[in-house]
Length: 352
Ligand code: KG4
Ligand code: ZN
Image (cartoon, protein in one colour):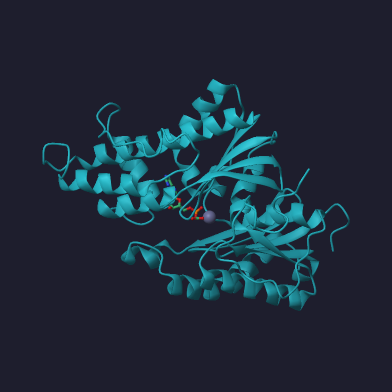
């Protein structure tokens, strides 16, 4: 068992199509493993929930065994097991939470249920020291959330997408262009092939809406039209690299403009960026320049911890464990779990 200051925690992540586990000791990563299911879902162009949950069931045991072996710890030395309980695909969450309950029960250690969006957000703390209040943008395949972070554990949702998540839009545009799933990295690569200034100009959805909400489904349709040679563009199908670049420029401009506006309105002292799409170099570069322009530090999740992983779950759980958070074995999954909204996760909004 770790002493009072030391906590050896196993983190498990299975909310979508990544089976992941990690063991951390405080802020030190002892072992980590991510088994991507991209190959399983690629033929379908998106995640097939039942296939994903079955893969989690098959992969979790060996993955956790491997982490234990590499960490040099015996299972009996773990202080707690943490697991994503939502948001995510129900069957996938059940696989992870069921497994974690077995570990907690078998070893007689506490169970800690974690909010996936908070875990993404908290992965920024792995990139440096946070300054509060901060405005954070969490952009992934399932989420697009702009949050005011008054301190870790103290969140207010400022805006979110009204339809598709950013990563989902990347994936769908990639699929229209015949690029492999997941589409984010493929679109980024195609966009980089198009010289600046040669991109197709797309509308900037909700840029002038005056609020902090997002929408990406109309942009997706505009992309389809240009690829098919419908609408503006003289009836000729647009060149795919120019479409990829134009799509990315439109997305990034809106994400940045709203994040900077949120920072101004809330007098934030720091900007944060996390989630799978935060791996995108064009987005990171734009945020670096934007933050500099406002004189704010930018705290990004380290690239390898942007997409789903076990380290972000375990790292967040270390904080929750030290705060005394313990869940019992009746812990339920919550596929629609929110962050920073009234009626969201209990304990997420802590009055000062
Ligand atoms: O955080 P994540 O692993 O899963 C969710 O919580 O949804 O994010 C996955 C998403 C996918 O939509 C993927 O296309 C996107 O992140 N993504 C990217 C890049 N790398 C991953 N999007 C844009 N550019 C990238 N380089
Ligand atoms: Zn995620």
